[in-house]
Length: 416
Image (cartoon, rainbow, N blue to C red; front, side, top):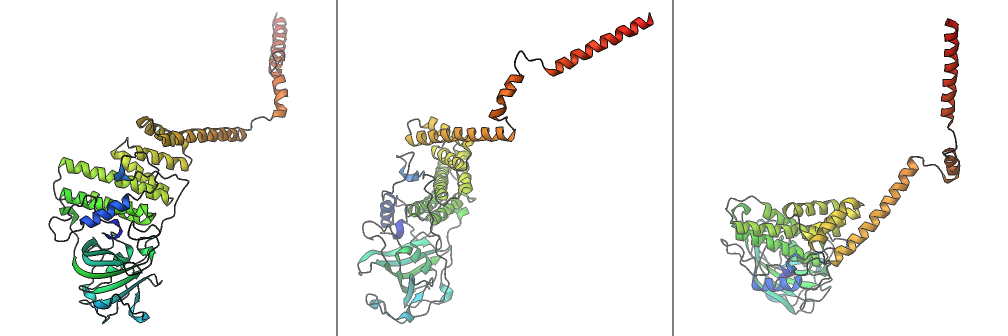
């Protein structure tokens, strides 16, 4: 059972040329349980479980929880033996307050090989992990869990404290639910708001694979793992970390390669990229990042002009910004692709109504700016334009012609 639902759903091996297994069947099982947790997302395509298909109403903007900052405080050594884990001493000086808030603490049980042996952010680490509830019951016992340090591939408590472990060190970590599984918990073994105790031993550290040298299948698996982790954080309503995971997945996909990919692998990478961009846009909308969401949707439509989710989301964002004339054609295009979709029907009807109201307001404003005559002066104007009324300009012209004729007659008579 994996920490935080990490690991691909298909349980595929990770790196073909390394000894670290970044996905075990246990990890895959936990991942599936988290992604199928029944979160009530607004969807356009209910059959596409792999893409979440979240289309959150823009009126329901959530607030993301920022990941805690890393604290590089030096870890003091301890002479406590591993067998004393179950009877944890309460001496305050034995515990390191990692974040300074008292919510995440670390204590060394078996010293490691020195501070210089600590892993660096971006490296792949392998740890032995045991996770316990406050009553001491073990909910996870993994002899070899591997992940990339700093990518939030595992629960935050482990990701933060692993950066403070020395090679070979065994440590005890006490964490508030905020840095574990939060208010949702992990069904069925970790209840909501559960504080956890972790026993961790750092087994191995190595540099992460060079993205340029990854084979096509390896790159696809890595990108999918990061995307699935983003899906997990989205379901946990932690949109900041969801965006972080989607960004890492996209960075993997967009990285240059010195290896030739087959057309099938290229197509699959494009599909993963589109899924990442769609879910990235959903997360950005939750944080009210409209311009960023527009860019994500636009990138999807550059690859797939008829992507319904991107058309719908982009239309929603433009409508939120009052650009109804641009939003309506996008929703019409989405509705043409899926005529039976009630969500698009409802949104399009609402936008058409709002657009009509906006045009009426603009028309009234233009009339006011152009000085449209008031109602009180209308009768006089109409009377002046009556068919029986003779315009004064005509009278003046006729008089001038008559006077000119008389003057001409006088001149002719005088000459004769």
